Image (cartoon, rainbow, N blue to C red; front, side):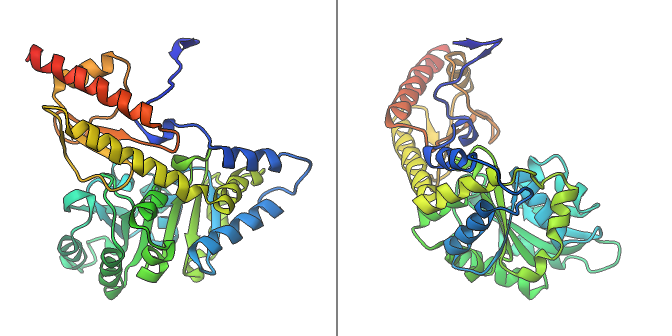
Length: 356
């Protein structure tokens, strides 16, 4: 099917961003659309959403709603840093690879220092080396450690891992920010309370994702240390992140959190990823690159097979080594979708092998 010159994409695995808006978020937006409501966040929907986030984390935290994850990460980091500071993160962290210098821009020059670590997780020895390797005035002073949960490779930090990272950072006077674009998927995988891998483990500020988990748009910046949120609303306004009709950013959070859809959607996406990994692992010539813990599946795929799969109309990203492919599952992914993709991969792999 064609809309203008672009095909209508029905079922795909390139990103959980490809999925639509889930019913719970959609209904909340529809309800918020009834009648007149005060603007710029001075409305009952935003207050209700903030309280739902506080209930979710079991904490008296400060909550701000912004349009997207880049804004959430960048403004959160800017609130923790000065221009001569640095932020330590993993080599594959979104703030390093996929935000077009926004964290540096909004913090007036804070430097990103990226460190290695297996499976998308930071290596604490490497982090400590980055913190302590220099202390002279010529080196950007480390100020923040940024963790990604779940990681860019779909792995998940356990509570003890988050706690150890926070203890190391705090020991050296650093704050800890968490990029939680897929935080719900991590919680669903761990089966723990959100507090256990956030403020109870030492996280100072968390950027909670909504768009990848069934919302149309919007992320929440959650400050567990309220002092760090001082004048954050001014940063949001200056960065063009203060929505005049804020209720349409905040209402979906009410729908997602009051209904439990935030975690239910994540559990479903994770389950589909497990099914996909099991189905793909049975195909000769296809092997998993990373253990499947959340809603991402990374496989080693022959380049010829990958091209065949794309020619058949499947969308996916390849950026983890030659021939590597990432498949993301979402709240909208069905078992039939998974089995259809697995069948397409099997056919492409067979053709790829014959062509090779």
